Length: 288
Image (cartoon, rainbow, N blue to C red; front, side, top):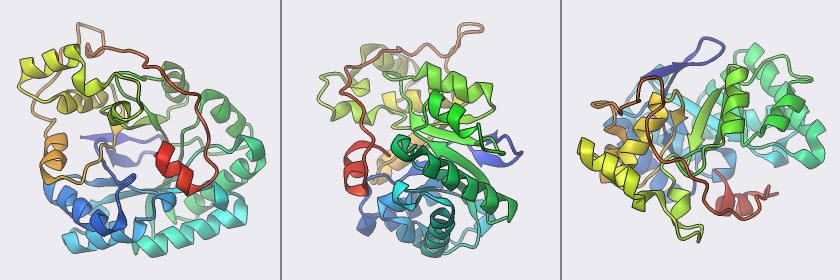
């Protein structure tokens, strides 16, 4: 199952993420994902595992054009020249000459001029054929509006936290209005199990009931929900059985109730104030 980006590029709707995956296990996890059938791999400069992602892709024996590679530029590399150099570093670590989707990891409100210059660099890389598509991550509607005051290319993707307990309707609406694909990180709400909120998507009785009715797991139900709503989703795991389970979501459909979207519960869980970390160490504790 693919989604068509706003520049006509086809991207697999379901991908494999490596946020917080230690470098020493990344190559094996990605290799297993590729063996399972995933064809979109999402990484980031700040994750510290781009080199291992590239190693796994080469080890897989798959042709380069069979794997869609997505990575992110970290805020310390924002600025026109810095971001172009960041591309070179990521491409070198991944072992590729072209990156399929290169996105900004998050907005930098305190220096939004650098965010804009970083995105201008992405536009140049796109025009030069060094990347096939460009986008953003963790951008709120105001960030998108400010970016597009100067940008000439609308982002193809906005990767944000989306799961049944945090659907971000305003962000999704802003994306949709501009033809931007919303890509979900923490798509099965794994983040809810360690935020100390006392509520987890995996224990939700409504999701469990839907899963039981389909003979599937709650994780599979949530991933299928994303795909049926037109989002891209990038679940992560290092366990072979979970990697396979999360990919086994194409043999069934959720009831939609006519024109309604699949009937998963849509709650907001209690949230601490959202911070925008300033270095990868904090990132690894906060955001993909």
